Length: 215
Ligand code: ADP
Ligand code: 5GP
Image (cartoon, rainbow, N blue to C red; front, top):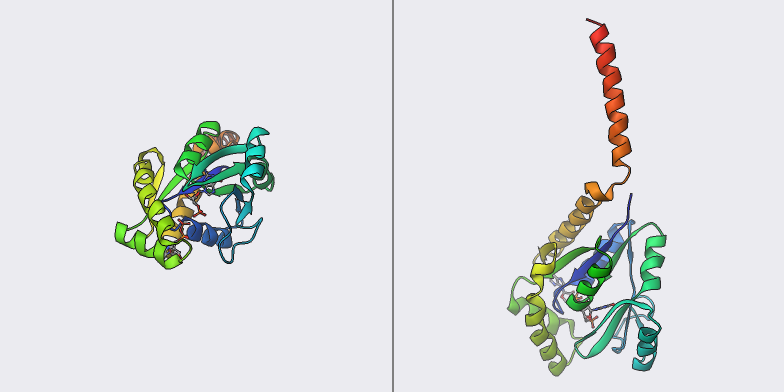
């Protein structure tokens, strides 16, 4: 089986982190790419599990050393995916699941065209605001920045291969999981298929030969 990167993007509060966590609990064939960021950790976030929390100086030094597969400034902070992190996950034989913004998705897909792009849509603007406020992770000013940025992020939906509406969480998780299953079965990803089909044709010819002799 060939592995591939899967990117989840959504406006802040759209539910991509929640969906990614559920998928990782459910599927052993997925590994998470832990991003680097200069934003401060939220309550409960663990360095190295949710993000690698870096100072701006350390982040910029890593940019200069060419360590990022992609990076972008999002809501006033820097975020990036380390090449080594993507390689680590792919090296375990799993698909690499990434929760990254629309700019990063565009960069990463240009460099790795086998990437599957999934956009998670909130059911409405009202619900998005309520979920973001309910999470309680941003003050009012930061929440407003995230809502304003959501408008520009939504205009990028057309670049994505799939769109999932996160109304009912279980259904949204099922749908992303189904996308990963279907992508894994794509002809151009299943390298061994040609040999398998040739084998089947040879077996079929044998069956036809035996069957025609029984006449
Ligand atoms: P993102 O990672 O896209 O910023 P989160 O995964 O943090 O979004 O979700 C934002 C908030 O909405 C969280 O408090 C989460 O528990 C909640 N949430 C996510 N999906 C749903 C859903 N389908 N129904 C209700 N609440 C949800
Ligand atoms: P948050 O601060 O809410 O965790 O994330 C803010 C935004 O940064 C989200 O859109 C999230 O997808 C994005 N993000 C997280 N990690 C990365 C990354 O490695 N690269 C890019 N480009 N964006 C990221």
